[in-house]
Image (cartoon, rainbow over all chains, first blue to last red; front, top):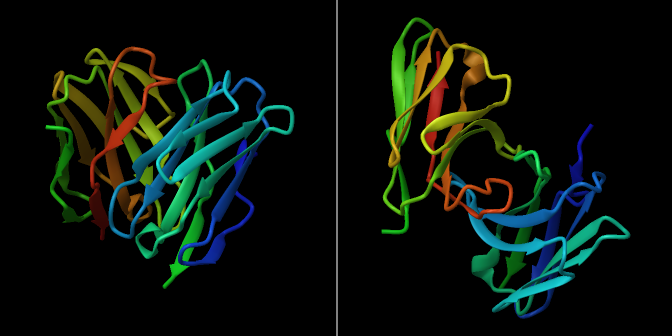
Length: 111
Length: 115
């Protein structure tokens, strides 16, 4: 049973527009959430994170929103750039030191 | 130095071979991790070392044997692997002892093929 789900396997966005990547989770014990970005043949790169005590965290063009009541988080990229084209993984963790990853969303930013 | 390095980049081995994957970080991080990633799947946690001691073993078969010789190095010894073990093996490290909340920094991975 997958505890972290990314229901959109792919997303295509025009350069300069907003990219919104979504993630849902089922375990209310998760207390920290992370987004990773992965290019082909490379390891995942940490992008941005958020603690469960916050509902928003911003870092440059990247903002993560957390809705605990809906068990939903999203990553907003504004403005989107062609270099943002990659696979984005959402991850969650709880007090038991385990990480749970979503299946990833492939973002394609068209020039 | 803010990177995690892994060697080799690529490895092809037979089912009877013994090989090792190496990972190194010089960021003073206290926790190091091994992940396995199959194509088009998210990374799966295999082992976690905290302060050079194995703290988590995610029910990984004994043909995978981790070793942490010191705080900067993490090895993964491979023996009698199966073709289904072919995958990208990722090493990561994090600062501090709160493994569940510290950001992990990943290496580029070793692409392993078992024939």
